[in-house]
Amino acid sequence: MTQEELFKKLIAHCKEYGFVFQSSEIYDGLSAVYDYGQNGVELKNNIRRYWWEAMTRLNENIVGIDAAIFMHPQTWVASGHVGAFNDPLIDNKDSKKRYRADVLIEDWMAKLEEKINKEVDKAAKRFGESFDEGMYRQTNPRVLEYQNKINEVNSRMVQALDANDLAEVKKIIEDCEIACPISGTRNWTDVRQFNLMFDTKMGSVSDDASTIYLRPETAQGIFVNYLNVQKTGRMKLPFGIAQVGKAFRNEIVARQFIFRMREFEQMEMQFFVRPGEEMKWYEYWMEKRMRWHKALGLGDQKYRFHKHEKLAHYANAASDIEFQFPFGFKEVEGIHSRTDFDLSNHQKHSGKKLQYFDPENNESYVPYVVETSIGLDRTFLLILSSAYNEEKITKEDGTVDERVVLKIPPALAPVKLAVLPLVKKDGLPEKARKIMDELKFDFACQYEEKDTIGKRYRRHDAIGTPFCITIDHQSLEDDTVTIRYRDTMEQERVPASRLREIMEEKVSMRKLLMNI
Ligand code: ATP
Image 1: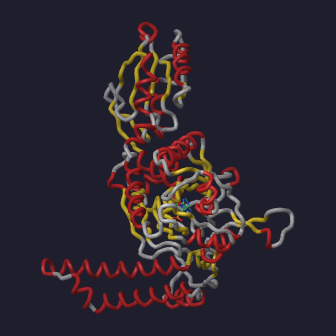
Image 2: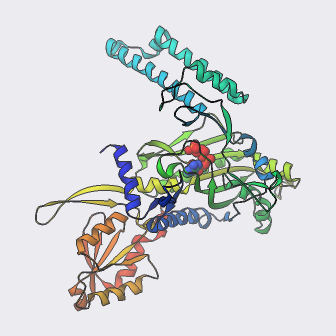
């Protein structure tokens, strides 16, 4: 199965088993907006809890807040989002498709890069052992021609974007003879700046003064509350503020399911430090966040860091944690050293002092900030894409069966245990209900008595339930039950009275948190 096929199957599975639905599906959906179903919401809540507890409970100097989505419009002027949170877009008049102009140019350069690589591969085959790739790249006329073209177009594009010269961006697209991949024509509109923020009106008077934005990141809710938390919590530097919440971006090209959405959820932590100490804390949080990811046990080799060469307007260092999704290594979390950019700008725009008085050296200053910012939906996709498995099983009679199993880390699974009477008679349902009634206060349990036991196991494999508890006739005699393990399909008979203690050990978040 190719990775593309796997991804398609995963999307279908998410819908079939109540994890993710397209928003407003009965109206044919809303592009890049999704709803979480009965199992999805549980998984999402558990991921959120894993992050929240790792951040706030395990770090004595990090506290949480929950700021509103709507914020004073000046917030977004101060943060730079009104002026700079733009993508240049262009439409093809024939296909009516919309593109990011810079991405069209970058794709064109990537094609030339591919041509260079093909030339190099051909030459390497031709010359064998004696091939000197560096020399070839520097001297081969065709390679040089391609490379010069790339360099020239790249520097024109960077200059045009820096100068906000959109006519020049269009000219580059024309000069490179870039055609629309759908219609094949070069019938382009002008390039326009497109702000990624959604706006709406607040109050009953519709004039410009009442335009407000849906926040494009949760971070600003933390910055504007920095002093409230520092003072009321008597926090000493270094300290952090964590928040989980919705963010909204009017992404021009939205694809790859819940990887790039227009409404999504972020889990962000802003760590306030002494100026000059930010690099130490940046390294610290890179390492600590990577440990949080790897503690999930999905495979260390699936993660890597990607260091940003081109930095955002607010950062002096930035790295992404990338994960190997079915469509390649992609960003799931960003760790950014944001300097004092945000707090200083809020200070300037609000006229309120946002300084910290450092009792150790009797100085007041605006703290520097190191941010960790992870997408909850992307983490959800990351977990499901590595949990999804199709397996062939040889049954007792020798026939081969197939199962789809979600090997979700037990602490995060939507349902922790299924309580299943073997048959729907002889007092087994009553016994099972009694066990369920004891366990439901501690674990997310599901009771099921319909269909054969095999079918019920399959249904729970498909939603990632790590343990099925089966109650049979022997249970009535000696008060034992069997635990059936999702990943190995092995069964173990244990006293019903020990179930709570056994399950606690296997599914508790504690174990996960201790692994970080
Ligand atoms: P990308 O380059 O993929 O657009 P970004 O660099 O703009 O992401 P940040 O602004 O650093 O992203 O946001 C932090 C995190 O928020 C990202 O690592 C990602 O997990 C999540 N995120 C950002 N945009 C989206 C989106 N449109 N849909 C889902 N998650 C998102």
